[in-house]
Amino acid sequence: MRKCILLILIIIFSFQFFWLTAQSRSAYDNLVKFGQLYSEGEFIKAEECLLNILNSKETLSKEYLRITYNNLGAVDCALGKYSDAINYYQKAEKIILNDKNSINYLADVYINIGQINRHVHLYPVVSISQ
Image 1 (cartoon, rainbow, N blue to C red):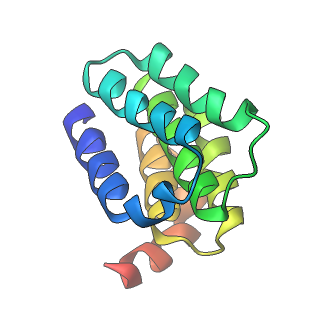
Image 2 (cartoon, rainbow, N blue to C red):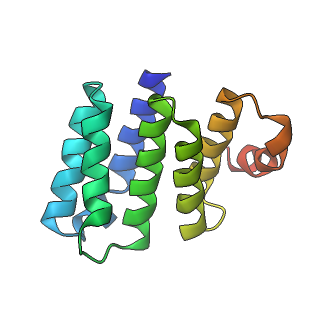
């Protein structure tokens, strides 16, 4: 599961590089540090990097916020904090409505906590996107 999440994060990061470079160096450095810490299994420290991005006084693009919230969701999912992960994935999805990545991750959390039937409405959107 962790390898799968890491692979997803790497893919997201590589496809989103264009938007990331438009942000400040501090936010970019925190995201790079996050990736390193996450891949080393240092989830608490990785989460701190992402929270530093959100707590900075910088104005972040919608895309950058979406990426940060999705990654916070991934960290919390890895830590077993599923309700926090759901919260972050929902925030990411609200930034860009019907964002397929956020919806996929949200659906995965619901699977992990055994609430598939309560949230089955997410799956038609996910299946269309694949």
